[in-house]
Length: 514
Image (cartoon, rainbow, N blue to C red):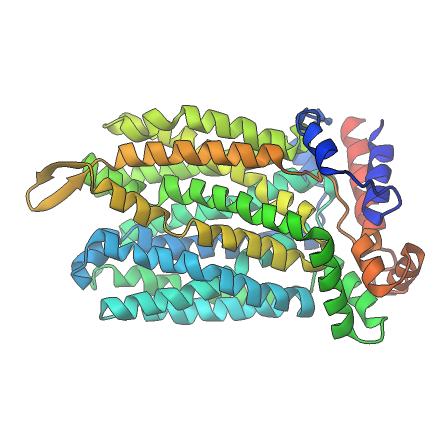
């Protein structure tokens, strides 16, 4: 089947014209057969990137920068655990509750901001998120007690929770189908890039310019101002504008939105539960491999601050490379196969990642994070393709953040178990075998992720425009032709996003393979 006919068939399935009902037995029987890599053609990645127009690149850029700074803000605590414990006279385990609270409350933010973004647009929820980032990062730097610190970080969790789904929708809704895999991988690596920035700036600001750890948090409040200005200069995504236009054509926008929600819950409730379970595994994977790793290096292996910084920088370079490469490969080999394959490799690398005791640990750190974030690189587009069209921001963000909630105690669990494996102290500093705990913990997590990915669905290549959304047809009681007529009435755009995006993709593919 050629590229064009395959795309047309997918469009028919998504519009409901070729929808197939599959019972549980048949679905289970297809888990192996559907895992077979489709071996799609692999165009030059640079030519894939050239498929994006200027506006699509700007959408990607604002989403990437925002997601990067979200990660920066989160890891400022992870990288200053020892400093915070000294300031507030608490144990490292107590300080990790500042991480746990953020993870626990992010689901609240994803629900609030996700529904707002799907109903009112991506722009203003994004701006409100960043205003809260500014206020709460400044407040963290001025905390004087442990209780104040926990309270501010709890509020910060709510603010942070609203960003991920918004960033994914902004970057990927209008993205040409052929370029989705590589753009997904690049977007997700904003997480690793933010970790890298946090590592570098923590070394630059903590205990170097006065006020101990506080300047790192004050600095973190600055860039969101620029993100707000940037986002104000951009419109809503074209996919959202089309969907909103269909809602406006009905008798009442809010009633239509509620009807869409009822259809989504009734038809996709089992899929939504699956996505939360899957994201729990992925969040255990990232936080379990990263949050306590700097503490392991300093506490167990006596790494100097400079050595920790170098190791973390190299690890995050591996993460950024892995996310981009595996995200791109998922367009060729499929989403599920790519996740399972790279997770197996990551599991095999756990021993050197946790037990090499000198500077040679840099190599396994690079490749382990290549695998962890390589699997994660598939996630933005995988979740987008699985999500109901009317609630992409809410579903992507909330499944991700409920997964965070399930995994919120990762660092606390590892720190608590680690205290059962004491090592000879270094002066007055207690030492623990954190490497052993991280290795066993991550082995279990990899097995869980592989299993959940294997039994789950995949909708690679699903069309995102409202003209191919069967749920919207049911919610509005309009057929596809009626919805297309509403969309084509947009004199500003002149043609539907599906037609424009698909034509651009097909033209690019033909040019690449010419």
